[in-house]
View (cartoon, rainbow, N blue to C red):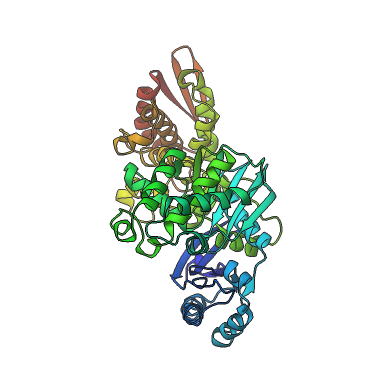
Length: 501
């Protein structure tokens, strides 16, 4: 039986105004988890709630959704199933009746979150999935809109208003397409709900509507990465998309690339709300978070104590390694060697702390593709970095990290497919950092390698690599000859090898 089967599993059910969603996560450590299953049911619990009550049709959809997600959740034998309700259940006068019926049918008790609890969980999810420090966070669901002010990774203020995608559509958009007056009324309602003085050039966003908008922008832009987490939408792109959505009839919106048919009716209002939030706070870009309230609830269940991770990148790298069978502690001698190589040759390559950070993370992930296919491990390693649940990195950094891991064992770095994301000199950057990683891996070529240390000494036009070991290292020196030649090519300097036993 694999070690992963012994790790605790946590299940979170989010009973929202638009959908009922399940997240099943396996804990990898106190600072990392992996998603093992998801389910989404378009229950539209908040639809038609204008008289303050859940409609009979909405209740039946909600109960069916609860039966579906509870059956999936229990199949994983989770340590706990946490079920929460948000705006639709906060507002409905018959919410308790629905909650009681759901309990009778599934034996799961739904806890209705207060607005500040919902915002706090969303904040934890976003903060533990991104590098945000001081910024504004926006989370839009079917029923409510939360706008959060964050200072130094602490939640300072929360604005929560019933301007989610369903509620905003039903209250303000009475025409198809909505009239100019209806759009202006919705914009005014958003502006009036957010206190003056809330400013931030960078906005982080979570929620299904935001991911839907990001998917449409990604397709329009022909962005080379499919991942939405970490995708950045510029204000002009969002404004143009919002206008395209509310100018079009429902039938025309159905033909738009990337638009989920389930969001044809409600995405225009959500786009207007987000566009107006960006205008109010002065944000020039929207950073998309793939983590939100559900993930925040998983973090709260897992960690018990402080919810906010002190180092998102390191925790994320450790999680990806653990999920893919890489012993990250065993990599530390290689990490130390890569650091020494980088620092000793810094006068030649002139790369900075951010580049060193990527090199060290890549060194910890080296070998990540071997457990899938030894002979194609370089390509599998690249794929796992691109598709894995890595947090705290920009899309450019993901490309660089994947390139370093992949090309550590081969000669040429081919990054043409990612040209729109790259900066000038990035190909040489990857080639050089990959050469450092190749040397570090070659020095520890064998299992239980006798190498104790690798030193690098730069003098005049020569770099000497001294490999200290407790017994003969013919295998390591043979592997190092190839990678020393790669390093010579990358740095434009002669490299000599010395073995000391």
